[in-house]
Length: 391
Image 1 (cartoon, rainbow, N blue to C red):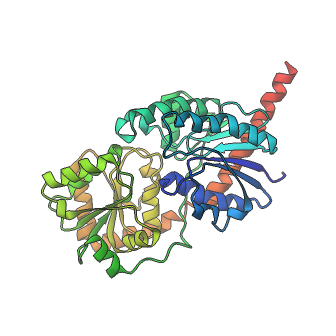
Image 2: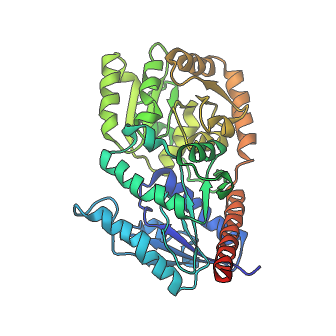
């Protein structure tokens, strides 16, 4: 088997791309390491961050910057971005003799002559919860992500729960969908900022910290988490870029009389975030639904005791390495957090279990599984082409 020629749709890759940004930034160097000699072409927007372009692995990639922006632009900007992914990318892939093009965040070309297509459909939460996106964004996803999944040679789901959802909701055949769980990087993290500096910056004093690193959207159930903090002797820290939903969360904390117990520090750099993980007494993810649950795995990999929802993909990730609760039951959430705050021997045991379990989820395994999907997509495209010629 010769090394592959791979195209990656990374138009979405901007500075604050969240979990989908982590997916790309961790997977690409592992693809390079897993199969030396592979050629990778990354199709990006004008907003590609300078740090990504100067990453240690960046020199091994051919960067193709498309004349579009994704976070801003004129009213018709969405059509321009979609055209870049559905029309410009396939032409560029064919010109460069690529074997496969992979849409890593829900969108892949609908028609790509001579090139196999793979799309990662991260989740379908936006179909059920209007609070995940604006109505305009949801319409755009319906018009782009669903057709991409229906026409791709192979679809990647990042958990078995996500695979089940795709099959049940979209009616795709299960044998067209490959499950490739995400990973966590244990080594090479940023050096944590000084603890005293961060505590002063976030006004934490010497109090215990309950940490939740997640997007502030309704399906993440941070409202339930804030309600669960009533009566607990700890501060809740919710880092991340502000959203419209954050205003509702701030009002809720005020109504409950615990606004002084909740911190919304906004986007934090890696050194600050690393220190937060180290001082956190526990990590909580109360989501109603998750495509995978990468924040939980990130906490487990750092040895932070975890409690999370018992729904969708989270039990797949956590296993027996954390406490589970019903995300619709505030008392259940409060009880789980209270246990970890009060029983430090249990917290230490779960922290150790989390470290051990996180070793099952490596980006190298994700890369190897992804390369298998690429080859399967290429083979299936060839078989279809041969069958058409015979007819």
